[in-house]
Image (cartoon, rainbow, N blue to C red; front, side):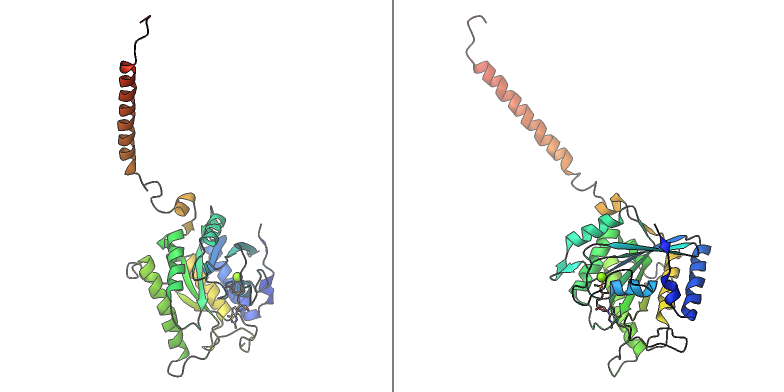
Length: 296
Ligand code: GDP
Ligand code: MG
């Protein structure tokens, strides 16, 4: 059951006004409930981002043992709209995909509908490596490539000074582009095929030391008030024309789970037939060879 979203009152007036306006937009577009799935590596700021968006400590955050062991859904209701945010544990362990964690997430999501996927990473990581590729691949494998049409790349730790030769916006563009390229190649979603649907990227600064403007709104080095900005992007993606993702058993089993190994069926039947025929022959021979009893 959703509880009243009280955290919204913690925000400065300008943020509250904008958030209520966005909730209004969601309701108008017949979205009484929006389910947001948060995924990414461990320690990148997934849980902190959930708390920042809600304006309350809804899920546990820790600098060291930074991950919850299982998915958690927080449901808050305001102005007739319910926000369901699903925080998940990181799916990488010791350099590999933790299949158990992934299974747990899939099972948790069974029979739920995902309206938005927040793919979280840090802005201040300088390269996209094999781990990123593995996480993106695992998400694609688990929920189908279509999930990226509901995706947003979220980059935390956004209050940084970029290297000398780059402006903040250039740095952001390059970092997000690098991640988006991985998604594009993993999901093989043709960007041209869906005009205006390129995977959006947003910045987040969860630190309590985030700079604020005159209206006490948390802002980034480029001046953008990031909380209304991320909620606006969520609203856009939730209401874009792509279908939301229904997580059912078929999706979890993967494409063609029923087809797998079907070609073996005639082969197995054939072998069975030959085997039974041979055994029957042996029995017949045995009977023929057996000495007849006197009464026969
Ligand atoms: P998760 O494992 O992805 O859920 O990451 P957490 O939200 O638990 O965050 C891990 C650590 O990073 C915590 O110590 C957070 O306080 C810190 N952290 C998360 N996001 C940010 C951010 O945007 N800026 C800064 N400075 N620290 C962050
Ligand atoms: Mg966490």
